[in-house]
Structures are given as C-alpha cells and as structure tokens.
Amino acid sequence: MVDINLQQLGLELGSGAVVGGIIGFAAKKVAKIVAIIVGLELALFKFLESRQILSVDWEALTGGMAGAGEAATSGTPPDWAMTILSTLSVSAGFTGGFLLGFKKG
Image (tube, rainbow, N blue to C red; front, side, top):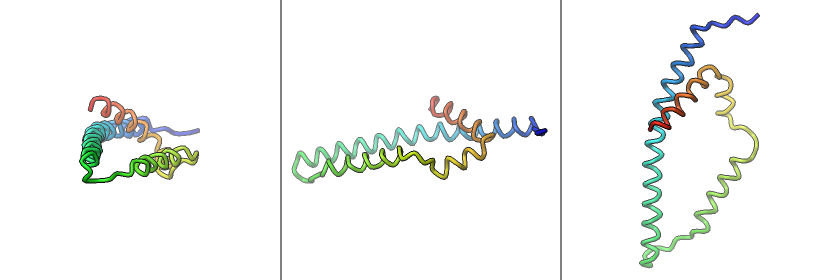
C-alpha cells in the first residue's frame, strides 16, 4: 500500500503555487517589455530602411522564426519537461500559480 503524507503533499502544492504565481506575474511583465522593445526595434529598422540608411533582409529575419517553429513540433519532449514530470506534486501547484499570476499580471 502506498503511504501518502497529505500534509507534505499540501505543503508542496501550496509552496509551488506561491512560487509559480510570483514567477508567472513577473514573466508576463517581462514578456510585455520584451514585446515592446522588439516592436520598437522593428519599427526603427523599417524607418531606417525607408530613409535608405539601413538595408534589412526581411526574408532571413522571418526564416529564423520558421526554424524555431519546426524545432517546437519535432515530437520529442525536452529534458526540462521530463524534469517537471518527475516532480509532479510541486509542479502541479506551480503551474496553477503560474497561470494565475500570468493572468493577473
């Protein structure tokens, strides 16, 4: 028979949820800042290209994004996914907290 310590399980889920919430909140804030910076950079590139100060190879720029998409659909889980699955009790709370923090951020 499997002996499950409910107090330890609750502690792991709760602490994972708190840490996940904080990280999710911060991740959304960082993602917004990165999106603004990338958008401004692309607008600057387009402006400089329109003034013929800079020449941008837009096909090469979008080609890198297509390569990243292909790597994401390769079908084999990355090592970090296997680590998360092996620590399911903490990661379940973390995931819930992360999603809540990301939504509130």
